[in-house]
Length: 81
Image 1 (cartoon, rainbow, N blue to C red):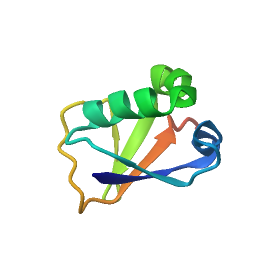
Image 2: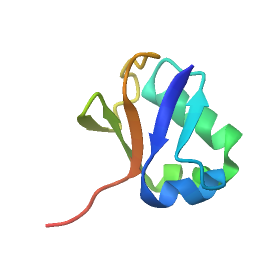
Image 3: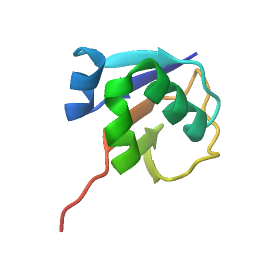
């Protein structure tokens, strides 16, 4: 199981939980399982999310390996300028 910290507005889709556990070994599996377990997250996942893995931010890194010892943070796509 991978512990996933949810950033900002994503928490509202999990009943306010800041951390959830998911059975996944890649970024793609993680997103698929989150969408299944927390249907309220599906719209944001479809719009796009970023994953911070041990402090490094990834976008669309579908097959990036994830393990139970990694620090995983899920957040909406960051925009700005």
